[in-house]
Structures are given as structure tokens and as C-alpha cells.
Length: 399
Image (tube, rainbow, N blue to C red; front, side, top):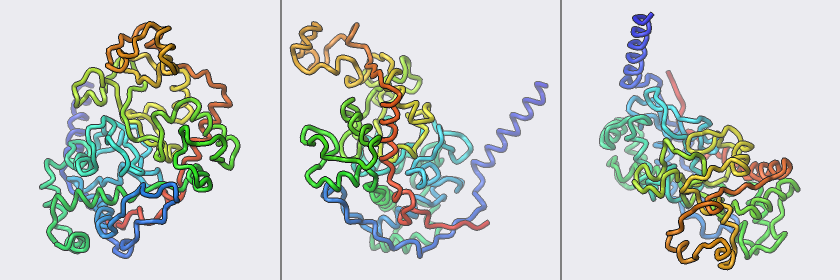
């Protein structure tokens, strides 16, 4: 039996090795008629100035690169393999498939409205798209190239790139600057602004943000009463402190109490800062109903599980975000004094969090309130985005 198991193991290794090095025999054929589109829209007034002007020719090139399997070493994986339009550019898996059958360590993040997001990646290791777009190409699991130069050599053999580079940059020279810039330009063009909340805000011209002291009660009205209750509860519970603004998150990293001991240390993986162990990027909640499973490791399969984590499951990790501690309800210096906490220590970060100061919040939501929150989260789906032909695959496939 041991000999049979050993033989089976060797066969499996051989298969994986072949798949790693063998070029995919399926051929992609570019349909140029699918290009030449306008990626710029007339955005609602409340989003005025929110988005930069998109260079259509550069974005076209970026779209081709995004869907081109030549960006993986054996031409089996493209950026779109892990970022699927119908899933709001997530992929529906706990861990994504790499070029040689191995899987990634983390869940693939959806990339909607990414031009307004920083830091990037679950661990926040990149601050801009220029740096971000290259990492998957040279990742030993995701796309497998040893360097960007190897990838450039490969795509230089494709007959469609000289013309695309000429249109985008006025040169047929296929280079790293062009690849990075074009993919970044296409990613920035993937814009979500047509969900139920967006429509409600467009009907409230005096409102520039969904939450905040400047928003009068009742100024934003969602058409469904359950969604409206969930929207109001989302604000009352303080969810918008992390998932705020027009993008409903995507701007910070935080420890949300998933574990007491983190196997994946998040931001601390690259920062080596013990105070950042367990911190991960807080993503935008736009289209969140389409992007399951949730969290960096895909541990939650449903929105119900996510809501229950915040309701009753937050763990008292020493780096737990301030907003998720019971003490986050403190509103005045007098409240701090009653707890024997010096406000100066909080400002300087010198508080020893003990006892009640370390306890995570318990929301004690009713079943109805949980369903209201989920109804609101589902209302953040932009159904136009997931079928917009401007973001679709410009290739067809032949054997």
C-alpha cells in the first residue's frame, strides 16, 4: 500500500509539473470590434469630481491585458480568472486557482471603484495601482513569471499588441510602463455608481455622503422599507466608521477580531509591527452580495455569517480595532475618567487595555435587525456593472 501511495504521489507531482510548464493549447483570438468604447460616463451630481477622466485607448489596452492568458507563464490564467465580471470582479472561491493548480493563500478581493482605494491587497502592502498590478504576474502561485521582463517577452510575440500600444501611447514599443499604466487605467474604469443607495442619493441633491452629521434625518429614502431600516441601522451601529464614504469602505486596514492567534498575520506580514498583527484591509461593501465568500480567508460563506460575527463573534485580540471595543461608545472625557483612563494616554497610544477596555462589542441584534442589515447590503448591488459590455472579455477561444 505504501508503494502504491508513493507511486500515486509521484504521478501527481509529474502532472502538476507538466501543467506548470506546458503552454495552454487553447488559443485566444482578440475581437477588435469589442474595443473602441467610451469608459467615461455622466456620473450623478453627488459624485462630481469623484472619478478621473479615463483615456479610452489606454483602458482598451488594459482590458486586453486583463483578459489575456499570456500574462501567466503557461497561458492558463488571466487577471480575469480571479476577478470575474458577473461576480463584481471577485471569483466566488475561498482561495483562487493559480497557473499550476496550486491555490492562493488568500481570497481574491473584488476590484470595483479601486481608483479611490488605498491601501491595496488584503495586507495593505501596496499604496497605488502602479505597484499593485505587477504583483500577481510575478507571484509564484498566481501567474508564475520570474520577472516582468519574461512576461514582456511573451506578449511581444502577440500580433495585436503593437497596434494597441500605438493607439494608447503613440509607439509600438511594448514596455513595462505601458503594461502597468494600461492595466491600472482599465481597473480605474470599473466604476460602480448605480445601486439602490446611489439612486436614492441622486434623488437627494443636497446630500454628498450617505452618513455623517450633515445628513438630515430622512434625507435619503430607499424604496424598500426593510432596506431603509437596514440603512439607518448601519449608520446607528457605527458600521460607517470603517465602511464609510461614497465607496462604503476600502480606505483602511483594521483588526476585526477574527482570531486570538492569527496564522496569517495580515499587515504585520510585511510591516513586522506587532501592533498590526491581524490587521487586514476593510473592503468596499459595494456589490458585497455578489462577492462571497468573505474575509481574507473566505471563512464566511454568507452575509448572515458576517453579520453574526459582528453581532456576537468578535474576539478580544489585543490589536482589536478601537471601534469594535465596548469603550468605543465613550463620547466625552468624563466617560474616560470614570473608567480611570487618561485621554492623553489614548492619544499617545499608551493605554494598557485591560478588563472592560479590551472587551469587544456585542450588538445583541434581533433576528429582524439582522435581516434588515442584510437587505441593505443586498441593495448595494450594481446590476448594470456586472453586465456592462465595456468590462467584458474581448477574446473568443478556439481549440
